[in-house]
Amino acid sequence: MERSGILCGGAWCIDRNISINHWPPEETVSTMLSERHHGGCPGHNMSVGLKKLGAPFPVSAIGLIGEDANGDQLIKICDDHGIERSALVKRADVSTSFTFVMNAKDTGKRTFFYSPGSHAAQIPDDFDFSRSTARIVHLGLPGIHEKLDAPWQGEASGWVAVLKKARAVGLKANIELVSVEPEKIRAAGLPLLPYLDTLIINDYEAGALANIETVSNGMTDASACRKAAEILMERSNVSLAAIHFPQGGIVLKRNGEIAEHTSVNIPKSEVVGSNGAGDAFAAGILFGHHESWPIQQSLKLAHASAATSMRHESTTGSIENWQECLRLANAWGWRG
Image 1 (cartoon, one colour):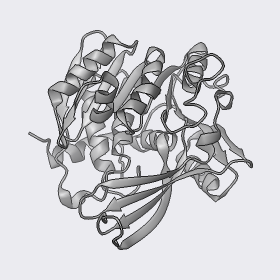
Image 2 (spheres, helix red, strand yellow):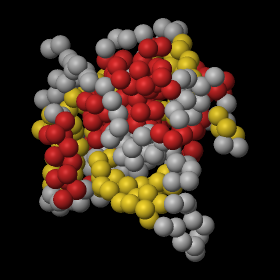
Image 3 (tube, one colour):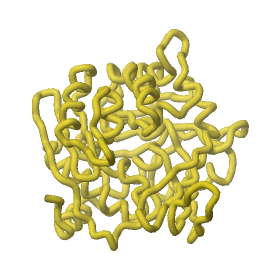
């Protein structure tokens, strides 16, 4: 069987995007400017992002959600975007995960308050890859899944069991991390490295996995990110490692190819929020990887996709097709 497409899952949730005028100190007040509900988490963000980029390959969903209004909204999103969803299972005994995403208008930064819901109930048995004809599976988020993070039937974690199931049917795997404490990132992420084909993470997560400092006083050290990517290549079987940070990004391939490129100099007036920008970057990398693009071209698309996503409070609301993303990025210019 010739495989094609990307299967997206592990975590599906609803983001309750709340715009606030500023992030308040404890025991003070901030004004809520608006509240809107959108899809979120890696399964949603990657699948919708790929569709909006104009993926010329199948995009499908896998995961566990509840039989509730939030679950219904995620199902509708899949149907509206043409995402095949037979493996996105609804169950009455769980509630769909949701996240309060607090977007501070004055800084553009966001803070998350996460309700695990169905994510806490997921176990490896909930991942049936037997009918998938996809080439790549994108999963997340290790570190905030109660049962998948724990040991499972002799495996280091449920995630390891899931990745082994994916490999057994011929799927190449990418996994998204979450920026929790470095010790938790290492505990959740290091056992997964032998079972991944690609690794697309941010500067903080790369430093945590490689156990080196990549961010100091809020500033990213690009050379340290490159070193982290090299360390992770040595400690894993990945064919491609990509690290992104506010000023740029780097992609390494196991064959020795390296690409580095600055990020898009998006005008401040265009920025509404950064929620989902990392997912949009990953969607650009996986889009190019699936289509066998040169890694420099994939990296530019990843930056362009991330930049366009920042024009909306949701994770995917303002992503354009890949040609328009690159046109906008070139029009805005690239950081020096």
